[in-house]
Length: 287
Image: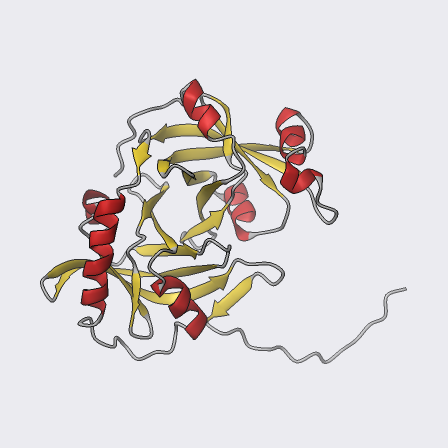
């Protein structure tokens, strides 16, 4: 269980969250009790104890927090500092200071097609404080992962990961984040930038970075893995954590993937398992 060090944000931290150019991730829990991860660059703090973010498109995360308010968050700024913690969804608004603030940012003020139509608010439960992204340790872990993936075997042989997903995850400088549900029922987010695909249905990552965070994940826990490139290509996976084991002498975590989702517009939808096409047998003409 993640121990939160702080229950408020400082004024300096609130200022750090304001720029549009940052990464904001929200981890939620779906109706089946499984973790979900969403990119929300609008996420910031309205006060020392409250976070908010804006909605301009429909998505799974919005429905999730309405049914289960427990959430996890990660904010990473351009200087590679990040904040991780837990929050609880409380309310929405379609007017107000935060609504006006988001719609007056360049991204939405000059957008002819869409703007922010709803603002979501979350009470801060706690966070770990400012953490510099440990790039040196991540690079070493990435090298270890590339060695381990060649020794990990072919897995079940199920054709789960398509070529696009393989390429996106295996690109060494793409960002990858894992989410799972902690013992107290809140989703938690862990950077796993070193992650790589192994075979046709697995993702592996050396556990030498964020070691204690990864050790806290129970074997057979459901995990979500979000991957994004710097040109905003994204993919979301979900699967079962196989625990941490030695692969060629390298301690690695492993996820057996059983679900893939495309979070990118214009068609955000499930990729795997492949949905069956339903035959249309009746037609009606609207008056």
